[in-house]
Amino acid sequence: MDTFNLRCLFSSLRSLRAQRSNLDVASDEKRDCRALRARNDDNNFKTLKRHNLRKVLRRGYYLLAALLSKFILLIPLRIAVTAGGLLGLAAYYVTGASRRRAILNLSAAFPGKNEVEIRAMARSVFLNQGKNLFELFSFPKLSNDKMLSLCRISNREIMTEAFKKGKGVLIASAHCANWEMMGATLSLSGFPINVIARRIYIEELNNMLVNLRLSKGVRVILRSGKESAREILRSLRHNEAIGILIDQDTAVPGVFVDFFGKKAWTPSGLATLAMRTGASVVLALDVRLPDDSHEVVLSGPFDFERTGNDEADIARHVQLITQKIEDHIRVYPGQWVWMHDRWKTRENE
Image (cartoon, rainbow, N blue to C red; front, side, top):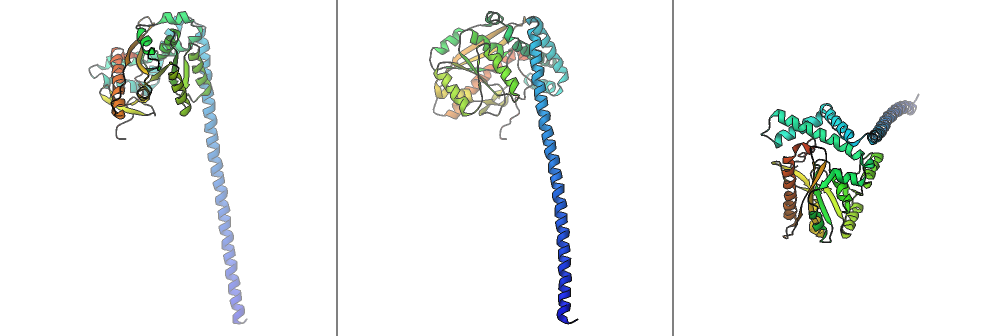
């Protein structure tokens, strides 16, 4: 065999080895692709499984709420409120994280109280929330006259005066006692009430709550960016009231103000609206009385003047309202939502 043929033979052998190597690589790549598809299919299956589980749970939550609301309509109001309180007390012992946060927040806010007093206040918080729920679900069976007999406005002339300006009324409020009863009572007393609310991710439950409020004349504006902003401005132009709860740390524009001795991120939308529209500002807070009737306490109207420094003005106005809310809570500590993580947002974060 001559040199040329030897070179050809070696070249052919090298070519065969290269092809075999390429086949091995291709085979490995196919195996890797099959494994990757299997993993993706597994991940997709797990994602689909979690999604379906969430749908089932959400449907279950709605059905439970619907069943509970139907049951509440079958029993007298006083028994329903008592049962709601018992359910709230049960939640105190069952929901460990919420109970611990309530106790922690109360201890920080009332350092002079001992452990027995703090735990008693925490139990009152949960008891009140249970009563709130059962009162809300009782709305369909309560006539307007019955509602007004259960909840009275102590100084309604403040609201009447606020509407005289003709630019709408911004009602600052907080999660004190039963804020749903308060809104319903203001509406049934002849004041055009709208409330801003966050959409609940369970659509059926969201619709249920919206309809319960509408049953007492309270119109709901769900937060949805530009659309809700237009609705708010339209309502103010028609000299209607907009109720806004400003006592929670939520993902909305806000400022840090003092609340029970600590800086708390507080929604500033109401103050901004007041300064830009000239709408009157009233503070409305509910009080649950010993016999489970309610009293709406009004204060204001407040003058949200502008000095030329909007940032400082907004912070000052938010602090003013927040301080009044704190003063109210100090008198009725068991009627506020202490399980809320009010100080979760920190400055300089």
